[in-house]
Length: 116
Image 1: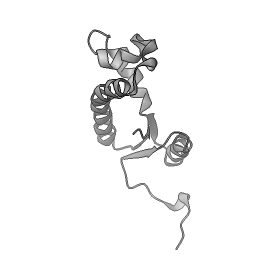
Image 2: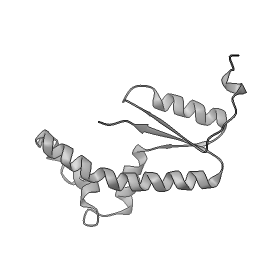
Image 3: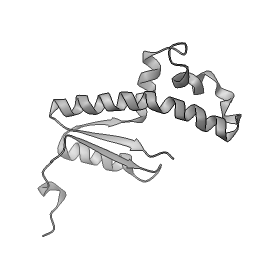
């Protein structure tokens, strides 16, 4: 039996939508959040939040790209290394957000771009 979206009941607390840039994650995320009447968080927002909560002296990896606008000219291996050092900090905040959303019991859609 084929069911429409309106017939589907929500069986999740946090729904993570992932995919490559331009694949339609944000469009789908907003439609699902609207349909199920739940909040939405774009994971890219975590970087901005972390930057506002810290200083470059406290978390130099998180502030690297804004503090070094010419860093785009670095060799690819150095760019990858700076990105890797920043990822664990962002992942910690994302995990905390997942726990917080699950604890609410109301549900949330999280939109995240997959990166290599």
